[in-house]
Amino acid sequence: MAKVKKTSKKQPVILITNDDGVTAPGIRALVEAVKGLGKVIVVAPDKPQSGMGHAITIGNPLRLQKVNVFENENVEAWACSGTPVDCVKLAVDKVIHSKPDICLSGINHGANHSINVIYSGTMSAALEAAIEGIPSIGFSLLDLSIEADFNAAKKYARILVEHVLDSEPHDKHLCLNVNIPKGEEKMIKGIKIARQAYAKYEEEFDERKDPHGKRYYWLTGEFINFDKGKDTDVWALENNFVSVVPVQFDLTNNELKKKLEKSWKF
Amino acid sequence: MAKVKKTSKKQPVILITNDDGVTAPGIRALVEAVKGLGKVIVVAPDKPQSGMGHAITIGNPLRLQKVNVFENENVEAWACSGTPVDCVKLAVDKVIHSKPDICLSGINHGANHSINVIYSGTMSAALEAAIEGIPSIGFSLLDLSIEADFNAAKKYARILVEHVLDSEPHDKHLCLNVNIPKGEEKMIKGIKIARQAYAKYEEEFDERKDPHGKRYYWLTGEFINFDKGKDTDVWALENNFVSVVPVQFDLTNNELKKKLEKSWKF
Image 1: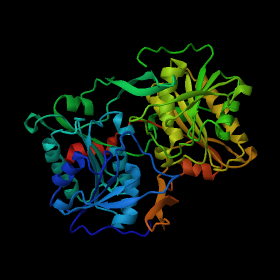
Image 2: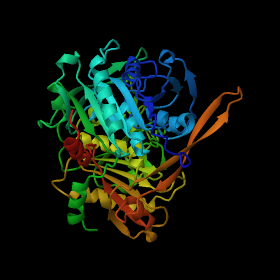
Image 3: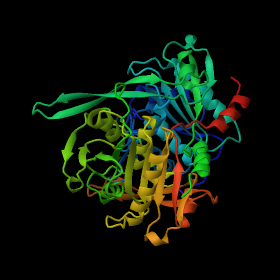
Image 4: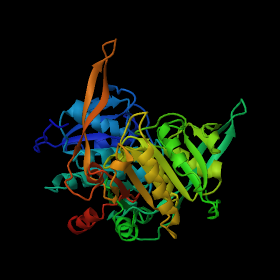
């Protein structure tokens, strides 16, 4: 992408992707949510890619196919055989041929608060855009159902996208992890800017035997919040706020770095 | 893992995994490097899993098979059908049945400095252990070759593992990203604790046509270091130091959070 240049700001170019696949109701909700805010282009996985984290496809080639999923909205859409991160990379290099003004990911069917940000294909796509210098937002609704009500999520997605597009000059590495509580719009109290809670899954693999007597394992787990802070995304969501966590791709633990620099002598 | 308890400290239990697969030369080098430091158990992917990032297997069950890869070293080894992160989860719940004292990942065939930490299966396995409260270190050698010389990497791996095992009481979420320069041991000047450089790949997909005339794309890219700091992992490696970056799984961008809290009003 060394040769691409920034798209004109006159009509913002909005790249939309997700990890549930190009035909998921959540991505349709996101396309509808930002209607009229810019030129929308969808490049999303051709199949569900939940839990793919920041995986990229190295050992296999990728396919990209134009699909008529959003023809009623007059939106160009492509299905990609790769991961959500692949979608962002391919979209910039081979579909848009330049950096979009913003990249949106979602709306995910299910929560991506706390530690989920690490496993989430939705958030990894957003983070990939931020690495590329494209401001990005990942949206997730705390409702796994295929029949989830996306109305509240759509309302808040539009508010936040407008906010980022209007905040000039914004941080080009800006990346927001937005989670929306499940339920009706009127139940939501507003938006809280929050930090990532220390909450995680306590895994218990479900061990079974196949018809040939060989063992196999299903990943299952119980979600536990170890973080009692009232400034976290989990707290905000439990109290019916939309949570907005600004996230970064610099994983350096600066506190530990300082400690080790003082105490470790080789 | 809610029911497991911390293993006794008398003989440390050392879990070893990687992303190049259980038969890769790099994991053998790591097993050899820590010989005598504790009871070693290997749980690693049954096939190469490079670039898998923090992917987990949700929609399919996992297989786990005992393999005689390290019988000469008297080390128990298991091949897992899943990702590096799956390996760590399964090892704790179904192989060790408790938390090991340390988790080591690698030695990766190829660099995992700077932004690579995000895409790397090696580092995601280490980070997964840290999430679980198991101190961890990921090791990578800047040599992709299957015939790479692991002697220097082995020496520094042993020094660092001893250091972490001896540093009591250590941070249970400690996670180190260690990269070792390519080349002979005598060329290496020592160890530098560093921060993650802002360096990334500028992607160019290689577009081809299959025998049926349909397009496909190979991910290729040029690595570019945008970070001129002399405190980064890339600088350390270019100057023949082993780089050690303490990494974290809290992705909150606290600086941006403060800025948004001040400037964004809804």
